[in-house]
Length: 275
Image 1: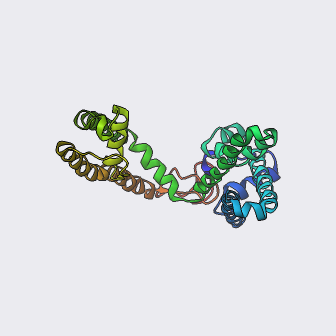
Image 2: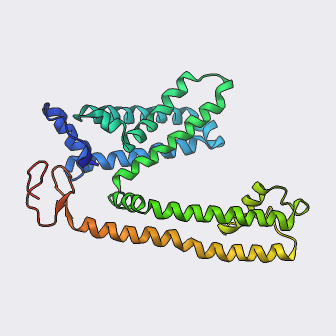
Image 3: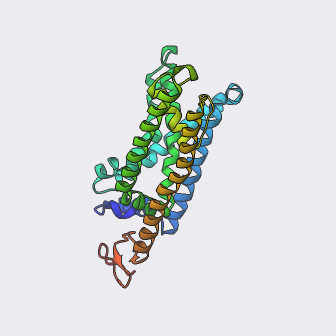
């Protein structure tokens, strides 16, 4: 994450804050990451506990205070990140910038939505706080490698999903013709829902074929479902292996975190520090 944003070097204290917040290789940076990591987990646990009625009735006030504590904590972190950057809007519009905003925005929005008529909206805002768990992604070094593999395989996955979608529509339509409304397949959309459940090997059992031809078709769909599960796994696994191989060839700067260096590079191309 540190290689994406530029520090505000015109100010010493802003530059120091940048080093602590964005550079995980430093001692202070590691301590900051650990503290924030634990705070994120604790805040998510607070939201989960608050959703349990029995716990909310007994500890509702304490959980409310804890929620605001974490909101202020993440708000301060968000503002400090912005202050430490040369181009703050680049961070605000980034994936992690949006996630950080989602971590604090729902709590503030709940203030301006009082009254029983807005209980549903408040409930949605409370659930949105769970998105704080996405903040954990930036503290897992392998996440960059995984995201790179997913992005590289996007076209293959898109073709695969389109093929599966086509199969589901065909199978669902056939089951509608074979079974009919009297056996629970009252419409093509409902039959397609059954095909999705069957092809993914979930099998809720709320709708089931009754005729011999329908059961034969269902058996074919089940077998097909097992065979297609391995396809996206193989695609992504191959891209992960390729991404790992490419990343192994790059050297990372311990000072600024830039990872776009050749394996034999001696100095960072961004900050000129020794690698």
